[in-house]
Length: 570
Ligand SMILES: Cc1ncc(C[n+]2csc(CCOP(=O)(O)OP(=O)(O)O)c2C)c(N)n1
Image (cartoon, rainbow, N blue to C red; front, top):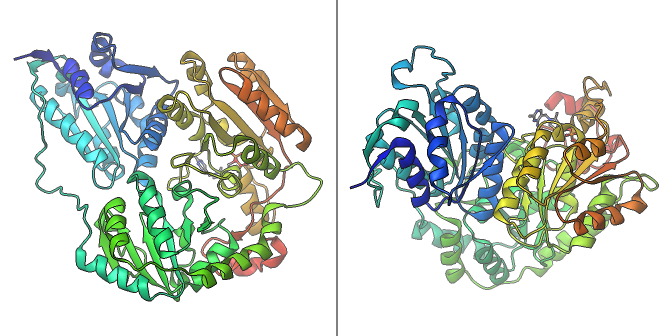
């Protein structure tokens, strides 16, 4: 029997879980773990510049690889710096394991140096968390933590390990299975309910599929496509569902919600059955709830029973895994076509698409940048976006063809996400082209990670859409706050010089004519490259549903909206 230190056990456990990379930052309370790490060269450790970035990088890695992402921090400030990323992973159901050091057991509860109650702090934002105060518990805790993170509805799990536990010695026996009596995710949906769903879909005249992150997390893209093709039902994809079906597929309609397309929101309001799978009816999708999908019976498939019936009244609830439920449904549902219904939606789209895609002529807008991306890259890239206007345009305007090519912070909307998440994506896909797209505001929230990009030789490409404002907030101020641009104009450093200081080449683009060349230059550069697009300052994201309004009331230009009404419902 092997006797190991707690720190060695932690490394052995990571190996047993198939971990080959982690993102972290050392400090006093996690030093025994870092002391053991060089004995395990199979465990690659990437030193970030801020723990928040370690968390987002672990997320980016998990969101693309389908494996559990791992991040590491010390106690106190290290652990609290992880909190935003943990919350982000919770909201978007991303499987990560966060390992934190804790002060020695005898100091816990005594306000020891760098002590924070991180299990207390993260209780509402983790799927589960552990404080380990006995070395004998370590193997079981690691086994359970990884199991919980990756099974059922995936999510973040935190393991806080007291420093003396990392130093203590014990027998290492890694359990082969877990024994968690209260935790039994249900993968196979209830047969009777699946049958009921099939009946409803067979009778529907105007059915619609709303596909969310659950399709990607459950690796059910193929099954979704087969189901949609057999039934002829058009598919809409939520912000986090984007890329689960190729966007040029004849049945793919695009994104619903606050900045979704008019034809998509119309389809939701007109459909008679809304088959929602792996999506959670976020308020950014539904708008005013009591008017949402008002003509539809809703079928809701979700692996998490707590989601079903949470926000909308469901005609047929199915608790199960997206892949298995789709397989079972496809077997029993009638083959069908809904060409009249599809043509009707496409007609609405045709009358709108011009205005939706082309704001005003003569300006250099982000629309030019995204159009070139799509044209040049032909679907062969992965994009991580930050949060704001550029994020919505990237969702609307870039075409995604393969699963897990669009990675964004959906539920929490975390500025500063793009660059560190892209690092994780690039680590997961070392031979692919990975782009981080950020606004001038969000980029400055985690730009210190340029150093990590260089130290780790990550060849990722960075695109800053610089409009000189916290653009999305400025848009709301313009529309709903009498144009009072309070705290949104933003000064930025010379991003090209900044990149240069890190040893990263870059180019600034100020005219639409130069976009394509800059993108080509980035692509043909071995290693990282940064492009700053200095775009028109006050362009808005349209179409838009005002916060709290019905998705029936979309507008495509401010003159179409009675601002007083909007402010009243906000
Ligand atoms: C950490 C964090 N703080 C504040 C916000 C609120 N917020 C949402 S969008 C936005 C503006 C983003 O500006 P920028 O990064 O320049 O992108 P743009 O909207 O101009 O594309 C802000 C401040 C947020 N989402 N996240």
